[in-house]
Length: 84
Figure 1 (cartoon, helix red, strand yellow):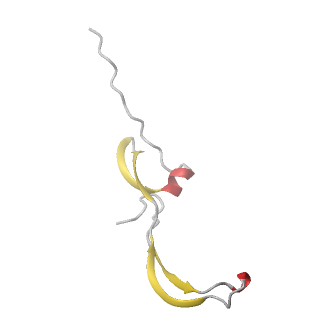
Figure 2 (cartoon, rainbow, N blue to C red):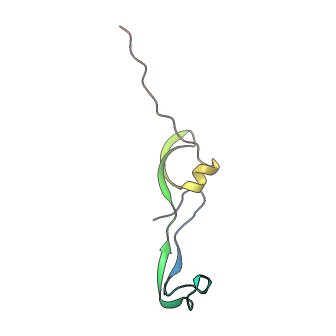
C-alpha cells in the first residue's frame, strides 16, 4: 500500500479538468470545459533505513516527514580495518 508509516498519508482522489479556449484576461472568449476525469494524488514516498526501537528497519516514509525530521536515519556502519 502507498501509505506513510509515520503520519499515515495515503492517496486521495480528485479530478482532472480538460479545458480548451483562451482565457478572457488574455483576449479570448473564456475557457470551456471539455471533460472531467477522476485521478489519484499519490504521496511522495521513499524507502528509508531508519532507527526504530534501537534497531534498523526499512520504512516507507513521505518526504514531508523526512524534511520535518520525524525520521532518524540509520548511519552506514563501516567495519574497522583489522591490523595484523
